[in-house]
Length: 316
Length: 316
Image (cartoon, rainbow over all chains, first blue to last red; front, side, top):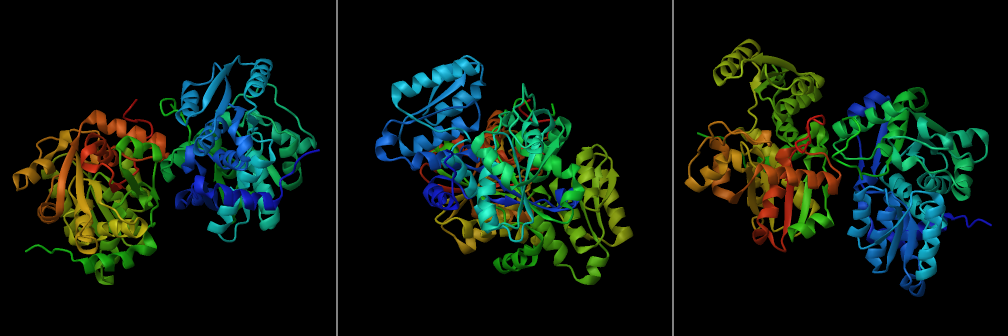
């Protein structure tokens, strides 16, 4: 049976993680509003600790452990922001953190985990190798596994983002977030369905990694075979717990082409003066292509992260 | 005789311009603090309307005009942020704005002025041509000249930035800002010398455009011959009004090499996830090179603007 997080879990999570996270600002741009024909409120999790919203869920998991559990440390497999954020949270609590990562993962991602005090254990770039190496790590250390998104503690933590957003902005009609594994979208559904049920939740996905879109339309989870997109944070599939929230509470999933994602990313950098990841540009890309859906509305847009390689920008 | 702005002028300016500007956020970075050995509070004017602090002074000048004066419009010569910001402010008031610019100025700067409704009049890239063309514009239109920095209204407007900063952050020991013509530094001196005289004011300048540094050491204004720096907003010389403030209230002027400026810029982009200009990186570059001056102190750092060509980043 699934452990489905409740709204109380989200409220507890917010109190628990407040000392370890930023209450990130909400930014607006008159020019982008004019292009969109709507009022957009960008919740800037790229300005979050460790550069990503994932520090919310990771901190909730780490600081919710008993002292005995915590002493054995935490572990995960992730070549993205979750590994970095779990390392950050573990560092704040002063406990060990191990991240299993393909040896082919970018050096910058390995350095980021180590920068916060975490340990990187390399595996071959295959699911078989990752699972074997990860099982070994857990057997050796007894570390608590914190899944990047299919975890009630993580989803409750991610839900704190839209709690802050509705405290910061009145009268929102909808909130839109990128969808990969669905952790942020699930947290958003958890919070808004309980605290502000009139606010619709939209998810935005790259056309070239549209497994959530196809799952949503089909009514069951479909995994992509080999997704390839500039929005590299969004390649992972939904799992049972995120599917629970997505299938029940999301109004629609919209998709964007690679070109539209890069254009939207550059537009945000240029107009809003913030550094954010390609994944974070997918919501604006879909808004600009679906003006009829959002016309005249007040829309919260979750900017999920800012960890990008400044030497390899996608418009160059 | 010079028209020296008073602290009352600054307070009036703040009330006047509040509807037209952002109260910009103050951001921090634990990693940068560790590198600096100090606590740094970045006042993010790159997130300001039109992408630069200069909208403060320009708005104060524009909204302080009588209706009769305003009807004739405003004019300036600037190939930088002041032209864009004056156009923004004039657009908000619905009055004409003319910006004289060398025909060789970047297309993006001309487009920015026009994007807010201003008119660009081109001159040859020489002081003689600029002055002749500008005189013609004023003779034809009767427009009010708003100098980019040597103007009491502009300095009073720039002073509102550090008023906000000391409302946002307690117990600052010093504030540091880049210095070109000295408008922001003068506004900072105006505000802090009256409202918080225990806070020291530092200015930061590129080694390759160090006229303010040499003027400060000599005790009189020295202009650079042909300054050449990546921090292209800082090539202009001090004038009598800004010299008044700089010579009286600045504790020291520190300089940074081109390489250190670019490194500091990239560090801020990478760690703080904000897009800012090379000019805005000069303060951090000098802080990292003068750790003894700032050790353990709480320092406000003015991030002056975010208008940068994303296709031509200086580390590429």
